[in-house]
Length: 293
Image (cartoon, rainbow, N blue to C red; front, side, top):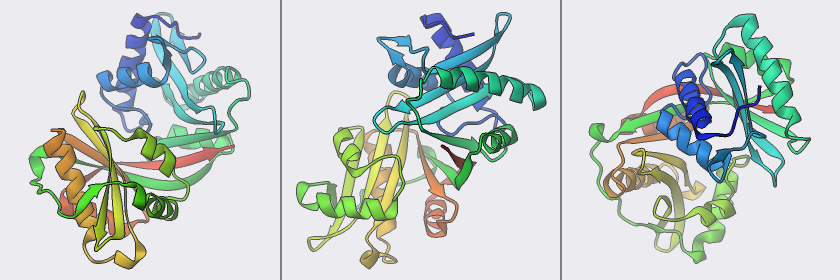
C-alpha cells in the first residue's frame, strides 16, 4: 500500500522510522533517531508543500499497523538516490519478503530516473547486508559515527582561523577533491550552502592555505555535524588538525550553543580516529556503505 500524504500519516511514518532506527539491527545511517528530527527531514526533503511525496516513500500495512517503509532521497541531476530503509518490523524470511515488495514498488515509481543507489547500514543490520548482496550491491567502505556531548568537553576558540574567502577557493577545492574524492558534497555545493548554520573555516599560515573544516548546525534539535576536516599535505603532523577541530567544537558548542556533535570517519583513517577519540568523541555506530548500480 502506498502511504497517504496527509499530516497524520506523515507523523505516523516519522514515529515508525525513529523507532526502527533506534535499534542497531535495523539502523540506517541516513535517517535520524529522534522523531522530531525525522519529521523535519521528511518535510524538508521528501515533501511538496507540506505533503509527503508518495513517489519517494512506500509503506506496507498489516491491517492498520505500519510494518514496513522504504524511501529514496533522490538527486535528480546526478541520477542517484540514498536508500532510506527498508525499515521493516520483522525478522528473517519475512523481512526479506517485505523488502522485495517495497523495493519493487518503490523503484517502479522512480521511472528509471535513478541509475545508482547508495546504502548505509549498521554493521549489526545483517538483513540489509544480505539484501544489498542479493541486489548486486558492492560494499564501498566501512565508517564509524562518533559523537561528543557539550557537557564532556571544554573548548577554546582556535587562533588563526577565518571564514573562506575567494582567494583561497581554488586551494580549498583542490584539497577537498584530494581528501574526499568520491564524497557526496562538492566544493561548489558546500560554498552555496554557507550561512550561519553552515560554516566553512580555513586555517592559514603567513598567507599560505593550511586546511579547512566544514560544519553544519541544527539549533532546533541542538545537534551539529563536523562534515569535513582536511589539512594540506605540507602542513600535516604539526597539530593543525586539532586546531581545526577545536574551532569546529567552539563554533558549534559555544556560538550556536548546540548540545551534541557527530561526525563520520572511514575506519581506515587511523590518524583521524585517534584525533577525535583524544578530543573526547566516542564511537556510537559502525556503518557499511554500499553502491548499487
